[in-house]
Amino acid sequence: MDARRTTLAAVRTLVALASAAAFVATGFAWSLHQRVDTAVVTSDAAIPTPRPTPEGEAFTALLVGLDARTDAQGDPLPPAVLDALHAGPDEGQLHTDTIILLHVPAGLDGRAVAISIPRDSFVPIAGGKGTHKINSAYRRGMEDSAEALRAQGLDGAELDRRARESGRRTLVATVQQLTGARIDHFAEIGMAGFVELTEALGGVPVCLNAPVHDSYSGVDLPAGRHLVSGPGALAFVRQRHGLEGGDLDRIARQQAFAAGLAQRVLATGTVTAPAQLQRLVDIATRYVVLDRGWQLDKALAQLRRVSGSSLTFHTIPTGRPDLRTPVDGIAVQIDRDEVRTFVRSLLDPADTPTTATPTAPAPAPTTTPPETDDDGDDLTVEPADVPGSTRTSAPPVITTGVPCVN
Image 1 (tube, helix red, strand yellow):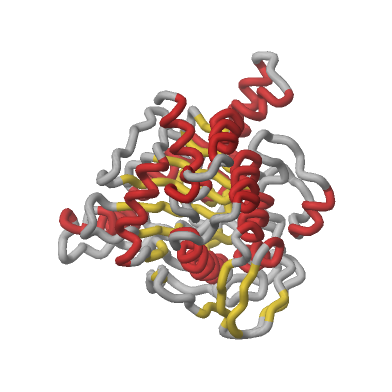
Image 2 (cartoon, helix red, strand yellow):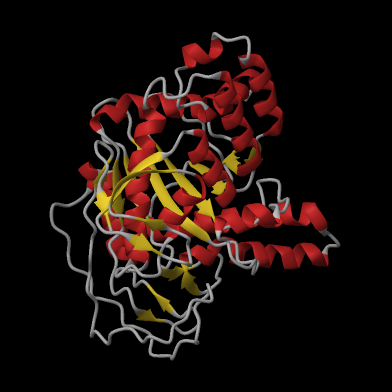
């Protein structure tokens, strides 16, 4: 990929919120091109064989929100920023608390879909790392690599960079293994980047069915419609304590938020001021990681073409949300065959049978869990002893409105 194409791809991603014509028309554009071209963090390992995505061709991307106390370069966030985020103690876990497959179809007739994978989904981790919550795949891949790299004499920033590449590769392989989908592209953003992005956009519209107050996440909002940004936006999507459905209710929060965010991002002319463009570029270069092969100018043009028919958010089918596991506390039960059938029905509907043979539920492990899960959450309240598996599939969320959630 030549320098000009790389520059345009990266910049148009950051300013998908503005028309390309208005952006290029300013003398301010070239300095932003240069800065993004030299400063944006790219991953060589997330997608081992990157594939260009010409406009008009379908692609599937893995979008990841990382619970990181560092920026994209691995530098620690200031303590004041961590306090504002209600980040809690740094236990080195690097969980991926948001995992979404985004599929943009070819042509103008298809419907773009986003598929959420609950962070507590209990699945096999790629690379023979056992069965665990999927949000630990990144960390487990990173830890295995770090141990080998230390044995080679590496340390510091280079060790962290290469270990994170292994973590990204492990997560991508785990999601592909679970869903059966081929992932073409990868994007990762940390907590601080999420906060600054929402502030730069002037907030994101959300709606609550009832008032919420949660000291863990920091969310404190009355019922009704709100425009959330900064730490308040992060608190809105991170809350899990106090929600009846736990991790699954948090998925609903994330999808409702993403629907509001998509409306703002995909709206032509949302961002036009040079100072605002500068801020978005700054956020991306500090907090966003992209796979090296993503030609985002063409990908975003394709998403804009189909966005008129709406972007729809779905959640993979899940079993019991109180699955007892041997080592990870309480998790969400997953049946891979059901997940693959569901994902294929959304990504390749013409290739999906009209009826599917029901899959027998997987038996729940009987080993007593530890007192805390891998987040350190208190598990003293025992889950209901429900026999067998109760399969659920959450209703889709569509970007044409701002859905109210719990």
